Image (cartoon, rainbow, N blue to C red; front, side, top):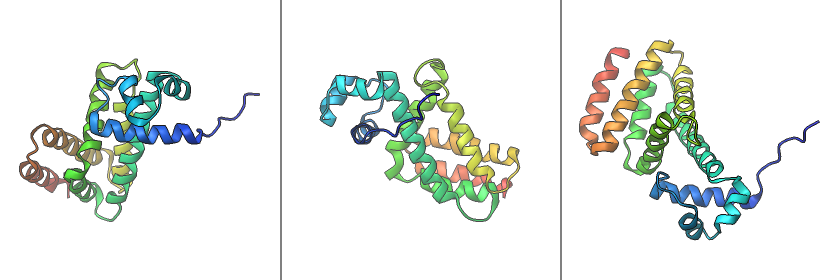
Length: 181
């Protein structure tokens, strides 16, 4: 009988949090273990021991960011009004400058999982879509309305991250969500 999975060690959890703070600022695309380890007060050897491999660390960081994103968006989403109203509240959170680092990390993970489906990034985009549809679907919206709201949010978010034009993207989200209300 296999042993039950063990809870992560306190050191692994601590280093994951420090690494997460680091990648929020620096991204993961060109992440190298040596500079990361130095920045968080560890060593590449310890990171490899705790996470199994660099891919294991990347996967842990992606899951950490997804958990953060889902928890925050879930809080914003709660309330009445269906998918369009939930999407509008979520957009208000997404458009806030304080969340750009997390959202850049989301975009990086989403894009990389599409071009590297068999690597550490694999499945991230698909899990992200499932997470968001579950959140929007919890409003009682039909799957098509939830998908339409998600498409609006995702497209506007990518545009916002690329241009920084919060006023224009917010107006576009408002217009696109109006027929869904």
